[in-house]
Image (cartoon, rainbow, N blue to C red):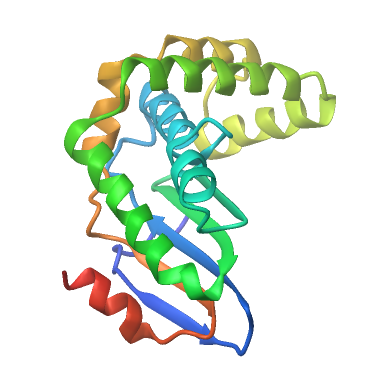
Length: 204
């Protein structure tokens, strides 16, 4: 037994620090059923195409095309009762608000239009391949088995987890994108900023 997660309340937390670089984290709570392994797999593919590889939307646009950051990524976590999607970036402080604005927009675009078939195919191959390589390490397999047993009470089958990633469809990823409200997010920032800077973006 465990205490259920509290209701998600969008929050902006800024730790003002006199520095040339900023650290940004954006957190969303996707409205998926975390007990459904197919939805968890689809969320993993979504986060991969959003910011999980060098071919992802965030990496390509925020870092490569616009040069707004040093690093940018997206990662998903599926706990016993709630899922979390987190976007992170390390960047020049003068570009932080611009990067934050565009990152929000990209999540909104996926929510409205969904990903492309090519994005899903590439993300699926990358995520499944990464897991195959990870499972060559017995410690990783042990942690995965413990997580499956303790968190989900699910069968311990590493091969099945790879098969589920391989089986994710465009329709399933688009459905996950629809369950991520681009306006409902929490923000944590370290750098020479104020909460008001980010509130202005949210108010647009």
